[in-house]
Structures are given as structure tokens and as C-alpha cells.
Length: 156
Image 1 (spheres, rainbow, N blue to C red):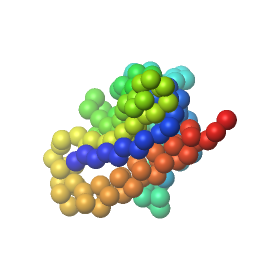
Image 2 (cartoon, rainbow, N blue to C red):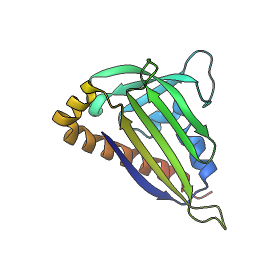
Image 3 (tube, rainbow, N blue to C red):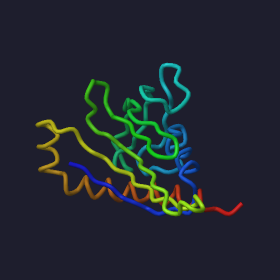
Image 4 (tube, helix red, strand yellow):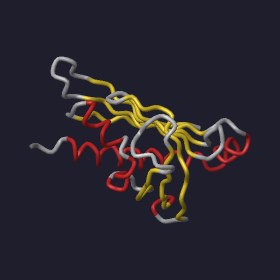
């Protein structure tokens, strides 16, 4: 009930982190989440900050808002958020950044991942539709990362 995609980018971890942690810009990258906004007066990616994302599931629908909470925010290293309003997120999305050229600081492997909560309803969902949703998530993560890569690798 999880998956990940890694893409190498010729950019610094700090530059990439600034993009993946700016939830208000997600519409430029994600094929499903086309906008997001901070909630409760939050203005940036601090642990505990909440935001809501406007999602168009599978790029077709249904269209809905979902509330998320930042659970990890380490500049240049990691950004993660949990989806759902309860104390246990139903899904966790995470970006991990690993420098690959420590001497120059210009190369980074970026991994986007998701992990569904281990609850009966989601286990049933994954058993029935996981093959399809897993492929959709993988394609969406790859598209997101490739769009970020195209932006950070633009010269100048």
C-alpha cells in the first residue's frame, strides 16, 4: 500500500525543496492536485501547518478538496504531509532529497512516495483496486517530478 519514484535533477536540494514544499504552486506540477491553499493563518511549510488541496482524481474526476497536515519539513532534505483530518493520516505523501554531487552541491536524487494507512478499509481497497491506483500514483509522481526537473534545470 505504498509506492515511490526517484528522479535525478541537476539542481541543489535547497532549490528543489523550495518548490516541493510550496503547496500553493502544486498546480504547476501535479497531474491531479491543481491548487492548494494554507489554512488557519499558515504561510509556509512548518510541521503542524495545515493546507487544503483541490484534487481532480485521475485527472478526470471526481473533484474535491482534501485537508492535509505537514508532518516533516527539513529544508533541503524532506517535505511530507498527511492527508485527512484525523489524528492518523489516511495517506502520507513524502519528498526526500539526497545530494548526489556533494563536492559541487548541484545534483540531487528526488524521491516522491506515498503510503496508505494500514487500516481495514484501505487494505480492502488496495486488494481490489491497488494495481490500478498504484500505477496511476506512480505515473502521477513521475509526471510531477519530471515537471519539477524541467523547471529547476532551466539555465539562467
